[in-house]
Length: 149
Image 1 (cartoon, rainbow, N blue to C red):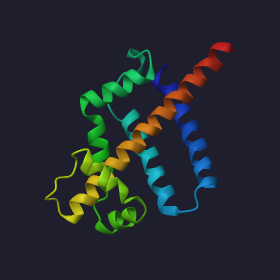
Image 2: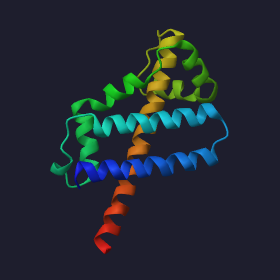
Image 3: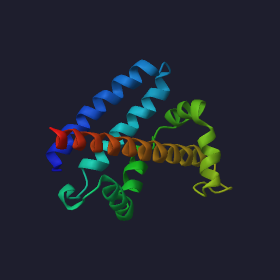
Image 4: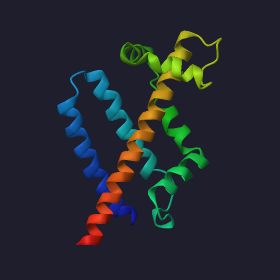
């Protein structure tokens, strides 16, 4: 698929995703973090120098993003710089701090803000991977429908 087609499909996916979340989620902080993952996915997919036409399957593009370090860059930029946003996030997602510690993203000697940042980073990474997996399935479905037409 060409980049232009994929951008159009991502816009459609994003709209469907947001409407689904808007109906399902009542907690604004929860919805806000998931919307943030959509924005991070969009930045990753369309603001980095990858030629979509060079890849046969979407999963290969995701592997390339990871190999080039683009995942780390976009996720790092997504971590809030204001402490109050990290504390807001932690009210609903504190378990990701423990998960990040277990994954080695947070050192035992880390202060509270470093722990919050590490937990947020880990959470955003998980959400980004889930969002990209879902978008990959969305693309496959679109390609199947296009082939049948």
